[in-house]
Length: 148
Image 1 (cartoon, helix red, strand yellow):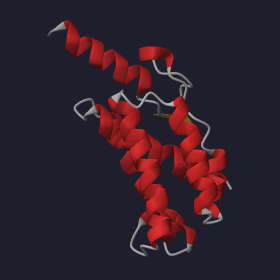
Image 2 (tube, rainbow, N blue to C red):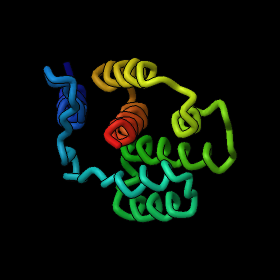
Image 3 (cartoon, rainbow, N blue to C red):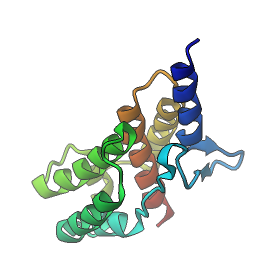
Image 4 (cartoon, rainbow, N blue to C red):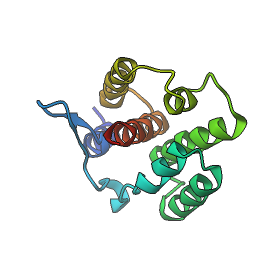
């Protein structure tokens, strides 16, 4: 196999970002191997979403955008997922997952099932970097939603 393949695989392992521990909690590396990009703190963003405060969520997203390397496919996908969450609340799309969660129209069991599916996607090495970032953002956000 080519060194490019192994470098990409090594990066995926470094930034696969999630490993399910035996107690069911998630563990996340705080840095990504390439460029040592640190994951953004999503707590203020998720709190703004929880309150359906689009203005604060956008401000938080703008702050994150300044810190993320959006030239990197992974972070572009990560940012896209977060932007989509804000847009769904802004538009009032009742079919969106984020609004279903905020309005209590999705069960905890369904969220757990979704988390498991996202975990599986994040661990699949054939997924493109932007998709990995997208799914990682959802996993991070869902984890924070479940904590509070």
